[in-house]
Image (cartoon, rainbow, N blue to C red):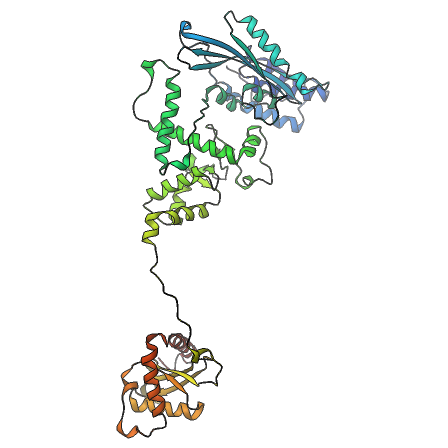
Amino acid sequence: MNSEVDPWSRDTKRQLISVTAKFYDPLGHISPYIIRAKILFQKLWQRDLNWDDELPSDLQDEWQKWKMELCDVNDIRIPRCLISFHGSTISKIELHAFGDASETAYGAGVYLVMTKEGHSSISNLVMAKSRVAPLKKMTLPRLELMAAKLGVFVKDSLKMRIDRVTCWTDSKIAGTVSMETLSNLIKSGGYSERTVKVFTELVENINLSPERYEHLDRLLRITAYCIRFGKNCRLPKAEGLVEYATPLEMQNAENYWIRKAQHERFINEIRQLSGGRQVAANSRLQQFDPLIDEDGLLRIGGRLQNSDLPEGTKHPILLPDKHPITMAIIRRYHLRQLHCGCESTLATLRQRYWILRGRREMKGVIYACPCCRRIESRAFASKMAPLPADRIRVTRPFENTGLDIAGSFFTRLGKKVNKNYICLFTCMTTRAVHLEVVSEVTALRLLQALRRFIARRGKPRILQLDNFKSFKKRHPHHRNDPAKQTEERATENRERVEKGWSGCLPCLHHCRKQLMHRSMARQCS
């Protein structure tokens, strides 16, 4: 089917009827495409325009879009042979007429279904008719009676035995979804690319459960064999394929499951896009500017059309969340990435697919992966013991005191640089802090610092400290020291509490170090 239009011609009513009349299609194979021009011509006739007047702006956009699809009409190839096998093997011939109507157009398509002796069937389109709805309003069931009339006309025209004639219509069948036949395209004004798809696409009905298969490749391989079996039943035995599944068959099987998942979750959006309308504003896919490719897959529109990326990366396939096929695809990419993390696997996956709430679905698959759970599992953490009573009871400040020695720092007195240390006393109940500077870490200097602390804050009831050797050292002339009893109690308490007593002291050392360096950065180092 060839058609040429002068791109420099004016868009008038004369040009519209001239271009439409050039199509010679007595059997109605491109009726879904021609009916759109007929509907447009009816709108022009209602506006009472002259033959050479320019089209209005709203109708001119529709006309320009229709002309841009003329190049796709040249790609349509219709096989002339209705029966592709020997007539002696035919056991039954049926004629099925599909009719449908809308407020703008109505149409019908007649299919010839032939059954072979091996119980395999093949169907071909015989002819189709399309008409614009008359200006005088009629009921839709009345318009759909055209299918019955067309079926009788074809039966009388075909010089062959017809065992059964069936007329299909959805005017009296409530709650069912009609088949996507040529009549449905005619009533809504189909596009040329979609028309080619109706003639060439084989619709499979494979009853497999994706949840039963742990690996996606196994599911795709079984699906490819099922599709091949259906094709081999329609071919002679010598032409059937019996080898392993080819990459093309595996890809077709994957496209089948993706289409099935999209039709289960995005059926409203697919219907809107197939009818040439925009996705509803309240749809989850509205932000993605979705489109339908030549394989019938729902993809993201996006803004990367002018990039050098592959087509699959510029327009990733949309996948629903919480679907078995989506989970299987994520598991396959997780294994191919050698059990990488969420972000790395998700970045690789998005080069071809876009999953709704993909990060959440990816984390769920990684969490359920036995290998990842074994590697990333945490060691057993024992339950923390209750805090000691001395730490949580109301007492006076520094009644329960912790003591620790901070690291050395240098001070300058005139030209002399001295090395000093800090004794940090903290109240284990209120976290009050008392600092004492010592010149060296010896038992004598530490006891002097303890005396200064007691003289200022009072003698603590409990003094908690670690097993530093200067703390444990006893001197003979300190037997009657006022801090002697406190030191002995501290040693006993340290041996009782062990290593868990001073968890707060390292934090206080860190705070003390930051404050000293900020306030005395040049005076100490």
